[in-house]
Length: 152
Image (cartoon, rainbow, N blue to C red; front, side):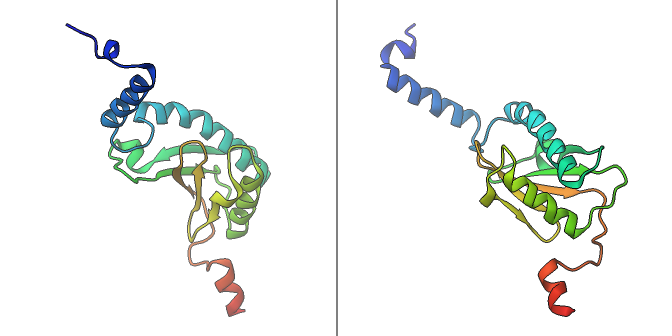
C-alpha cells in the first residue's frame, strides 16, 4: 500500500486535509464536539458579560435548540438560553446587554443586534450565528422600543 500523503506536496496535503474535514462535516461549521468545547468557554464569558451589563450576581447560559439536540443542519444558528435566576429582564435590560456586548471582548460591535425577542450575534472567529434568549422577561405584551415610542 501507498500512503496518499507520500504522493502530495505539503500545500496539496493541506488542501486534502481541508477537503476531508469538509466531507466529514458538511455543515461548514465546526464539528459538534469542537463546537461544544468552544462553547463552554464562550458561555462562561457570556455569563460574565451579562452579569456586568445587568449588575447581577447569578446568570446561567446554556445551548438549546437543534445544536443541543444534535439535529443542526447547514445554516442552523445556535440558540442560547440565558437564565437570570428569577430576575425579570425588560427590553431596556436587553438594550443594555446589547450595548455592553458591542464593547466586550469576543463580540464585534456590528454583529450584536437586538431582535424582537432575542439578541442576535455572530461568533467572530467561526461566523456562527447565535440567538440569546432570556428565560425570565417582562416583555410578554411589551412592544419593541421604537414602536412603543411612536404610540406614546
